[in-house]
Image (cartoon, rainbow, N blue to C red; front, top):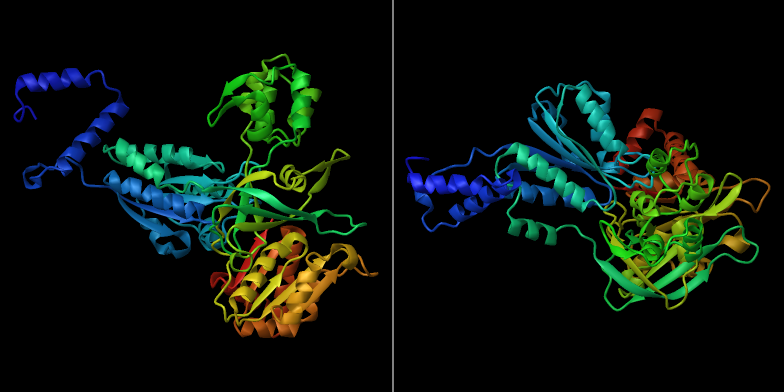
Length: 565
């Protein structure tokens, strides 16, 4: 270098760079590289970069977030002179694992701690087999929702297993909540800086990356219809909600609507009165600057605090707290403290969005309205009835009230080709996506047959969308209909019982290429339905092992899809 520059220029550069931080030096390095790349005579430019590293960037996804994020990170790596092999774990060749030198994984976790459907084979292979990973340097980025107890469990399981198999953790695991963009980019920047002395991105590239990232598009609508579908005397409240918009909504049958609920102002006022704090005080948070009242009502989770939040409160108040499902009001009442309320606010997580299966069809209802089917979620904690934050919020919406929402694409819960037959099993609010499916197929003239199996407690009070379903049956949009009302007879009859009664017909449909969908509660409904399907297959000549393999193949071929919660 001293031969290429005069002593005066070299001294000037040393003096200039002596005050730069490491991050600033990295940026300058990238800036100079950019100037060299745009030089009009590149043949005269000496090669100053090291040979680019090669990495594998794999993803495991259920809703598409992990794939979109991995694709974005792959672009960032390439701009930083890193060669990337981008692949879904469902397409990954297991024999390549022992050969990997740098392996990075972006993977989501389902609500109950399970891997995404298409990632299960990869997950099981790693967990159940002894693989030599001593050559591997790895990093794992987990996507999840901290409102669930098994937050990022799939990522944690694979991290521990990789270490057990001899892998070396190149960058510590990063667990990201629903708002994952900033944490994931920071994590990957650290990865890039370790892999290569080249910058993770120039400032302009960084802006381009962020602007083209997977940030959600939010729609603003107004409530046009709000009806309780259950009749007088029902034990349940299930609301049909129609939201209209000025903008066209980009969605398909099977997609979900994401919404962030507001907390009840009465609860917010109780909290502020208890701590004697001025509700108009303006606070600056990571995402928003607002009054304390607005923060507690619109932005922060105050209803069912996570264990980690309660633990933080206990640490700086000195209380020993055993309860796990405390709201902020109950926490402050049971474990009072004189600490500054601003400190309490600082540990509260932001309100997480809730997802609801869309029950409308763009072809049947248009693209400027969208429908939801929402059950008011009631449960008991310490002998007191509680109501789910979002279901309460949605059940109490007023006509003409404004709501903001986004669409969550469901890539593995979609209608097949229009000539394919489908079997839909959806008790309770599990009917929501199937109302969308049937309406869409009816509006587009699909030729495939539609078999609906619906269940609830009582025929008279709980037959959701009864008039529509009967109309669809009369017109042939529904070719087969089976109903299970569990509390109308001496014996409780559920959807799996109706399924079992039609054993040979179910098997015949599947053998003829039908697609099978299940929507509703996972435990016990989905597990009971799945066991019943295995019994049906065995009744029709399969061994226990063959029946399991048959269902697995249906899942692999995307002919057996679930939307359970």
